[in-house]
View 1 (cartoon, one colour):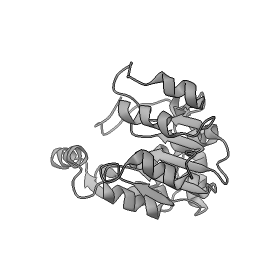
View 2: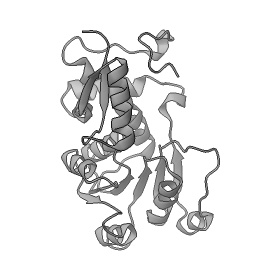
View 3: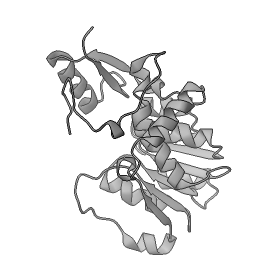
Length: 235
């Protein structure tokens, strides 16, 4: 994929220009958040609706930020890490749930008056979370799938699909036929001050062997309340 390289040759059609002002470390966060913007556009209007987001890494936080900005009545953030859920509140979540500490289904029913969220978003990339978003969505609601599964085939309970009859929207911005416009739009939103995905950068490290290893360990072991690490090349 070209990772861990100081330079990478690419098609100019897959690149965008960034503003000359501001912190480059923060501007580059418009790329992952821009892919979420594409998914939110596929999702449709959430004005006045209830939205549940499964997973609150940088992608899940981006969904929280954007659905809150779009006027969702409820933004329910779900994650196993309390520090991520605290970030979720900062990005606009109205409710947070840690399934290790409370029953997820019961909590969602309480929040949504027993009917379930209008929209559920899978942003974690695990078979269990994929199955869960179908179990939690209200009947005839919408399920947005963003997280990439580790295997080509994962177990899901299709009886839930038949009972709930949701609209299922798998989203991958890079395969949309237009891989850059949604990122340009995110840059424009940040430049106008409407959203700031750069706030998700919790750590800034150098692009060297020691710091690269440190970054991987931080992600793998979830150290130091890490959310997003940006590696800088050169001085």
